[in-house]
Image (cartoon, rainbow over all chains, first blue to last red; front, side, top):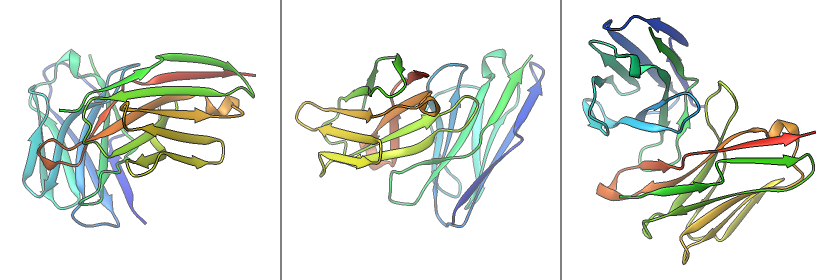
Length: 112
Length: 114
């Protein structure tokens, strides 16, 4: 069966510091991968999605970037965090060619 | 692109009553409509979905109905229980540029009082 992992689970970072969040999927190949952000008490904002290694589409221009160095690995990064980057970051995957998405456990990021 | 509106934003019901959450979508080409349940501090979990070739789907106490003509779909929860308390999100497939993206509604906070 398929499993999606995210780490770290929680993170507290100062403003201006860099960020690296990792997501990996097990038990499948060639998945579509997604990064979402959820502000406290709010909905799901799609940040990036990827249909293959090195293929990243950005949904919202901001100080975040994403990379997919391996088929089942998706990384979210920032060079300098802003206070507004605080939130619950969710990685999701879907089988290639389908639209059913499954979410990872999330990373709760607090920028102070 | 697709746009999804969800109502109500909050819903309070007595245990045992039914709850209905409604969503409307804008793109008539959308063909997939999932519902997710998110408990406090947890990930969204897929609870039921429906495709455009079906008008209704049921799984125990939850059901989803789809009206393609009116471009709206609804989640029905019967015999609600306190553990149904959560935020529920609807979504619709976004077929713009032939991507496998979902467009989510803004969520409904359901509270079930014992």
